[in-house]
Image (cartoon, rainbow, N blue to C red):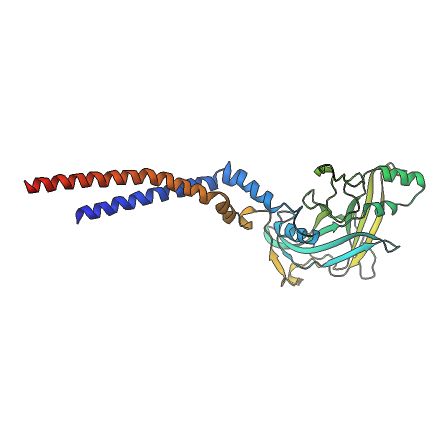
Length: 331
């Protein structure tokens, strides 16, 4: 009975040692700055942010919203507060714009509080048409055509009940995200130089046109819900009489639902943002499926072979001892 008990204890150790080794190797891999918190995590984020071949621009925007256009907002409304196809006075398309509402945490008077942040997306930009919005003589138009495509900026103004602008020292400019994640498939030209790419050549990623992404954090909860949105186009390198890049307003709209008080917002359709944190995006499941399971398996098999060999030797020696004891008993 004692021998059987010893055999079971040794067998348990033989099994537990490979399991422990697999766990320790997997744990080391997951928390390693080089692997689990380094190259594997970068690969995971790269996979998640590979938008180029997945779905429509709108679907890519949804994915980007969930990932987080910045690390600030912790939740956002699935439904945009404003979405429209912007057109000029001749009813020609200029671009599409979507504005989403989100919540982020900031510190006010030493306390952590929720504040509203508005997220902007401008896409399907018709750069060639926007060039024409500057007007001017043929010489100016030629300069504009030879320059890079116009860059867009978004300004926000508080509006009084009588639709007049609340006087401020300076307008509130939407902070643009310097992000090259969603290529503007609906733009009328591929490159910032205003040309279409040659399909026989690989695209130069740095020169492609990407959608406009920006955010407007509203610290002032008393800001009027009536707000004017102005979008200005500017052409770099083409200057006016003041030696500044020429600009023109290509879109204006007064919104009546630019609510800035968190308590006044219906959060029924709000969902959590990943805030650009891989651990919030299911990284643990991904890294197990891509790396840890087979690393753990190899470790378990290799260690199991070693401990199993010792166990076989132990059984063999035990059997030899039993045979010797039987021979002595017969004598």
